Image (tube, rainbow, N blue to C red; front, top):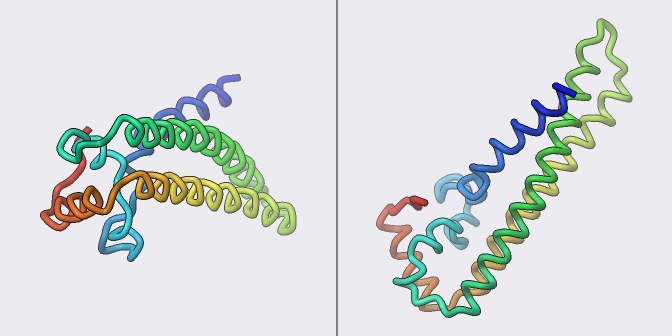
Length: 146
């Protein structure tokens, strides 16, 4: 019971920083320059003149992603613990360990896909002018602060 609680608390703590972790830094990933950090969009919602429908779409996408990502993080933490436990043996069952690793990596893939889906939905909710303004703020080196 304690282990399950600890895993849950770790996953929740990780979930608190989820929005920040969703967008790679511009220098790290060519896609990052084409997509927008949810925090940057929300920080400048008024300056971007987000319409109510846009705001609803963006907030809805963020809430859905957060719920899904938290669930995936919990599953990944549990599978990771299973893999660690398997590796603690003196003689590691290679097939079983690789199968556990495949589960962990599959969950990582699902998380990255969900994060990309969120960023696409945010971009698609924005007009060209709003995207241009966000690009200007990004080029100026503005960091999201929420």
